[in-house]
Amino acid sequence: MSEITEVLVPIRLDIDLDEVKLRDVFVWNMNEQYLTPEMFAELLCEDLFLDTSKFVKPISESIRTQVIDFEAIYEYELPHNTTQRVEINLDLQVGKVNLRDKFEWDLNNTNTNAPEVFSRQLSAELGLGGEYVGIIAHGIRDQLFRYRKRIVEEFEGIDKKEEPLDSGFRKMTEASKWVPQLEVLSNDELEKLLIAQERNIRRLRRETRFKRSSRRAPTVRS
Image 1 (spheres, rainbow, N blue to C red):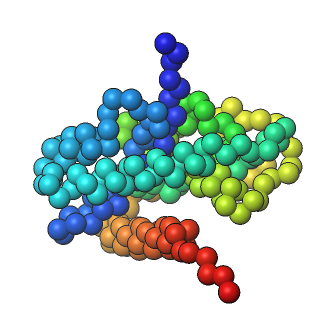
Image 2: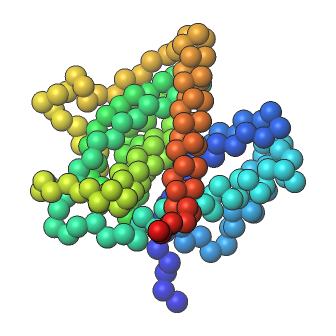
């Protein structure tokens, strides 16, 4: 029996229900054979003490929808013989610590665990806790997916040929702009950041709804 390839999908949960704001990020194996979104949702509800009768369905539906969207983009073949370097911008927050960083990544380097290896190394170098490893890797995978999706939907590619990248790359000629920045936020700064994040979540949610409704809209012919 041939081994099934693991393909990791960046999943983001943004669910508001019964005055509960559920925010979580993780990766899901697109070829998962045993754990269903419903099973995962039940386990998550148990861990967070959420009402399974209310939260299992929206959680599982969100996971399944994102996996389907990813699969459609994943199967799209990018142009051959070109290296697609893209800029990854991280702006992540755990507790009162905010991490901002910028580096380049090879868009074609998606079939490996390179994001996880890079995030572990970066976290170790900065003395960050283990909770940052998964968040950084998710941030990388999420942005790579969005870049690929943009190319597929808008038919925009990068024609410039460059050396392939095995991991993140920083421009040494602009070192001051391409280094990690850690900032411990005050209570006021943290509150402002959380408000800005909520606004961004609502904006992304509106954009996603608009794109999906546009796809379903029937064509009217005269």
